[in-house]
Image 1 (cartoon, rainbow, N blue to C red):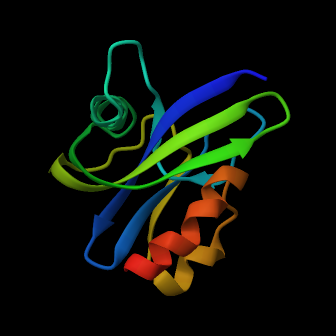
Image 2: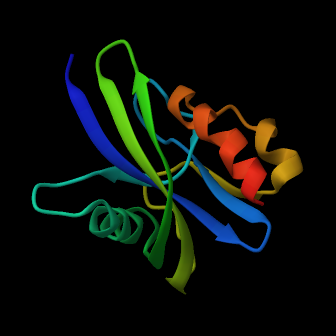
Length: 128
């Protein structure tokens, strides 16, 4: 099975976490932490900063690795490095996602997360 390596930013502002609803493919409308694929020659942190700039027109600081999620989708295996992140410059303008919101610990379960992202929610709740 093909492995796809991606990064995800858990953008934090105090006790709030930024989430986006996917705007394309079979998972359109499902919620996720923004990010994307790691390109050849990039570190995960470099990929994360590039992806957030492309998708949200925002500069972030990639912080500590929260966890690496390993998840088997029907067509591929996903390996996703999830990092804490904070906005350095920009307004989190949606370029690819169809919707976004800030969630707090008590509301993290109110959106329909992508299957791989569900696995990191409990770790995030423990930290905010």
